[in-house]
Image (cartoon, one colour):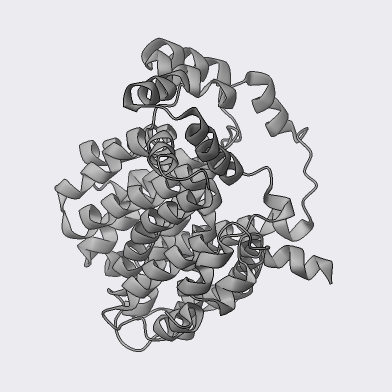
Amino acid sequence: MIWPCATLFYYLKNFRKPVAKNVMWLFTIFFAATFAIGVESEGSDVVSYITEVSLLHNLNLNVKEAFLYYMNSKEIDVSRTFLAYVVSLTTDNGFYLIVIYGIIFGFFFSRNIWYVLERLERKIKFFTLILIVTLFLVIPIWNLNGFRFWTAAHVFIYGLLPFIFERKRKSLIWCFITPFIFHYSFLFALIPLSAYLIFGNRVKIYFILFLISFFISEFDISQFNTLIEQYVPESIAERSESYRIEDKVEALREGEIKSDKVWYAKYYGKALRWSIVALLILIYWGSRKTIKENQELLRLLSFIFLFFFFANLLATIPSGGRFLAIGNFIGLAFLLLHLQNNIINKDIQTLSKIAMPFLLFFAVVSLRTGLYSFSVMTLIGNPITAIFTLGENIALNDIIKGF
């Protein structure tokens, strides 16, 4: 209530304290209350979320009319329209919706992070500390600006981890409702999950598929479209059409979609991805006996290889590359648990030292992107001051550029 940012740093340092994950959850809500839309974020999804609240408030729809509004939107998942409508019943200020987003996103974010951290043993190694920082930044709290997809990612992981580690099949309900509640594209994420449920641990086969996927730069988009149109419900086919336009896919492959991003914005994601991939491959070859003795890590590694196979294929489609973030998250979870809790051979130690600057590069650039949403009040304010600045905060990035 006095200084949330300082409280957060204290409990990040002391993450083993029982209340630490709830402090992270509360800080995410506070961050949402002090959320700023920078100049460079004006075209992001969050702007349309905020605008929709004002629109619905002025329309003053009853429940039946709101349902028709949802049906006409051609959305498959319901969270966006439902939450916007509920908030619009009492206000036209869309920033209250962002606070609701913070409550939901923060819960799943904090639970996923601490599900991994609570399994770390002994004193934290230096490289483990870097991996922890990286884990926080793979799907960070400022991804609220794309609430639907990134919340879906954390909800999917929230259902996946207890199944992998504790064989809790009931937790998979979270994975299977994700496409219908948060983002329809997670129907694709259910493919590797369903394959794993059918075939189980086939780590050698999944590893081979994992390697092959890096050499598949494209697949026949026209045949893919044919399958979608024949076997997928019409509403889903229509909603996903913009992602399957053949000319757009070909332009993406040929590099015709130009990017004005600076060099570090283009390569920081690749630095993370290839660091994870290199470590996973070396660990698989060098520590197979150790992994086989730990069934939890064996199941996790099997699923990682299988999921990355599908994610690498999806990455050839516009916006499909976002699924790599889920692979990165569970890949980092595996690396954290294996490298912290087991004795590591010299080859892996050497590669860890090589990967260290690349992971730090990712962390620095990722934190830089957070400046588009963080405000001064996020750093020095509290819930009381947030009430008076809701919707009027200026992004730190804009302030820095102003100087």
